[in-house]
Length: 213
Image (cartoon, rainbow, N blue to C red; front, top):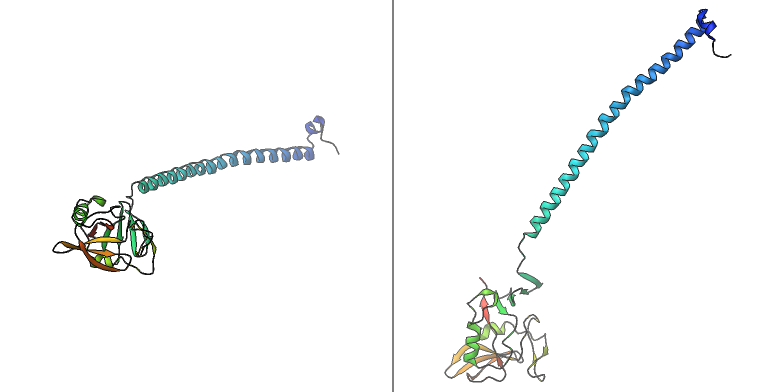
């Protein structure tokens, strides 16, 4: 059955009139629903986007703050830890067993006792001015018979130093003790200390030391 004609409508056909009114009601309901739903969706998505923007900004600010704080942290002076011995950035080595700080290397060439004493007292490693000649007992503390390497000044002699972080150029190192015209030196070849004339300068070296504060 087709749609009602205008004549049928004018004649007051109740079926057609009701049918038409029913369709109009449906159309009107759909329009009202669409108009109501559209602004509701806008109210949901606009605040969500704003909140997401705020979260991103906060995250970026926190990341920048943490990075700036990390850049301002001071660098630790100790850079290598090999159990007992710690090498510093200033050319010195800390012996945690004895709490002594040693120069990372000796003077590098033959030197008599007087010159060795002056060398140690004028040494300024780490910006300190309290360096000195070590005692024979302090030098003994660096001896380790189980560790061996050739002596640079004479390959015939091996030296036995507890750590490779301290570079000794030769096997004999002056000590602070004196006896008349003689002075003590420690042999890293034999592990003992001996007396030599203070003027001796062929195989002896100077190794500055200071006490850690």
